[in-house]
Length: 116
Image (cartoon, rainbow, N blue to C red; front, side):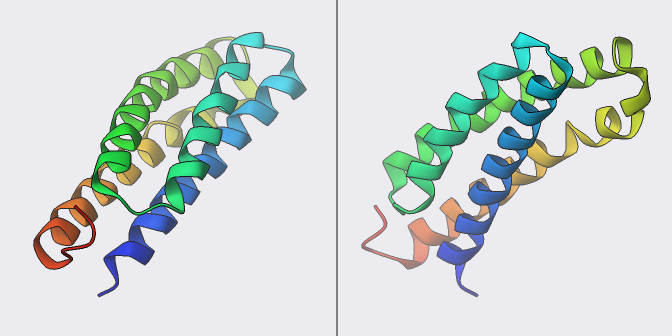
C-alpha cells in the first residue's frame, strides 16, 4: 500500500474541510469560522512534503482542528439550526484524518528510510 499517497489524501481532505468551514463562515457571517483558513494553508503546505517532522506539525494542527470542529458543531447546531447534518458530521472528518495520518506515519517510519 502506498502510505505516502494515503497520507496526502488525508491531509487534502482535512484542508478541504477547513476551506468548507471557512466558506460556511463567510456565507453565514460568523467571524469565528475565519480561523479555519490558517490551518488549511498549513496542511496544504505539509501535504506535499512527506517528512516525519512536518507530519508532527500536521498532527498538532489536526488535533487543534478536532477541538475547533467540536466548537463549530456546537455553534452551527445552536445558531444555524438548519445545518444539523453538518454539525453531526463535522467532528468525524478531523478525527478520521488524524487517525489516518498517525497510521501512515507509523507505517512510513518503519518502511521508508527517507521519511525520517
